Image (cartoon, helix red, strand yellow):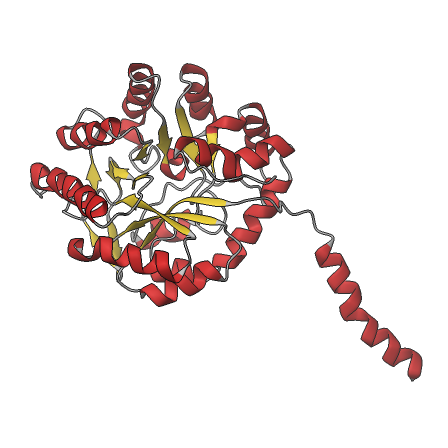
Length: 330
């Protein structure tokens, strides 16, 4: 009986040792794009940020236009500076095709003035929605939009950011709008070459296939990929397709064993400056459910890359492109 008790007591110790021996990237981690909506309070989102292993979050705001700057300042204070501001680009109906484009553009300019007036040292702008699939969800009713990089409101928004010397974050959906993917891909190469000294970052990996990503990497030096929503937590396409509720074009960089696919892993190691880590938390459940799990998941994935690659994707690239002046510890 005594031997049996000793064996039982030893089990938790054995499990803990096994867990702690797992290879984890322990360096500085920047979430280069997340958002806060109206369904979570400043206090709640701040608590999540404070209790999760992300060193810095670049944060854009959703919801009421009038509250954006005030909300950010509150969260910045509550997190003791663990967030930096990305000026929202879509709070005046920018991504709604029936809204007046000039009103939306003026909204971006006004939010920039608000940030300056409130002495917020913003580091860039949130994503510019070029394409976005329709949503039929209790938290978002949205008709969708399918523009391109030559559309009036897109060009005007890009011009604002170009003048500000900030990276341009673009939201395109090559899978959800497969019929236009060749056109968008061509335009991404064109704009990269047109502005060789500017950086363009593609949200959610642009839903890109690896062959298309290789074209971007080969033909441009300044069009990069943000890793948000490219893991198994979001790549549940078939259920969404059946329900018709949201995007169905998410890609995943991971295999069935939750390891980085060999082709993507090789591409990252060969092009370490071209990928930027972000989670893009948007809705309340992104912050409240599995936030820590997703961070831990990505820290394991980063650890599987070359050390220089993991440090650049986790911290170094965002640090450079957004001019954060943060010390990146590998």
